[in-house]
Amino acid sequence: MGRETWRGRGGPVVNQSRRHRKANSRGPVEGARLDRAFVSFLLVFIVMVALLQASLRFDSVRRLLNESIRLEGLPLGRQMEGLRDTAYPWLDWPPASDPAPTGTLYLRLLGGARGEVWVLVNGRAVRALAADGGTVAVKDGDYIEVMSLNGPVRVVVSSVSGNVIAPAVGDHCRGQGTVFLCRASLR
Image (tube, rainbow, N blue to C red; front, side, top):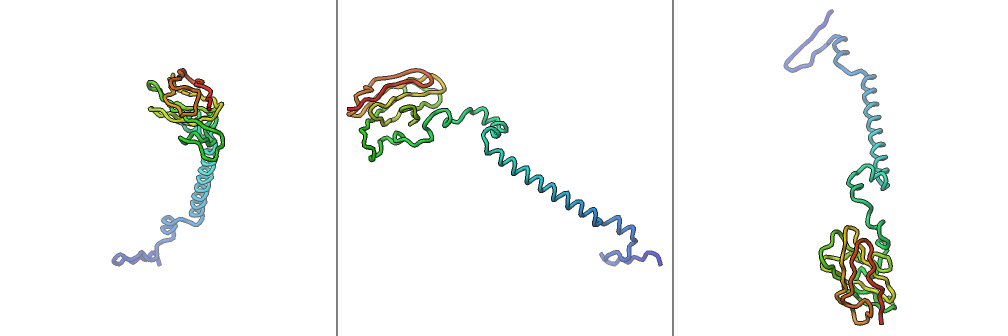
């Protein structure tokens, strides 16, 4: 009987030889091997992504993998005490619930400062001075300092509230790093 084929208009080939069918089709072993390889690749990929994401939660690994983070330096919150704590001087006026008398100082930058300039009250960062200055609320006995990390800075006290004895209008400081301005004294 031999090989019989029937080709109609676009019709299938009927009764092909066994060798022809075997050569043109994927066997069950080869298909299972491809499926297993795909699933193992997918699992390894998912595990690698999960490990990478978990490792990026730590600053040391993030600094190692990302050069721009290394170039930026330490976050400001680690360089200066008090940035994580809330403090009343972030507001221009102290909260009403505070029974201690408070005074207000207006500090102004003289000349251009490179980078940010921070006002520290008792060693805690309370305000970043803008180019035109800013107000800071103080209590009696507070130590007021100015910090500039990127170069020299000059700051002058240009206005004080009526109950502030020291610093007086015109008191100033200049320097680089953390510079002591004055100790606040109130009536």
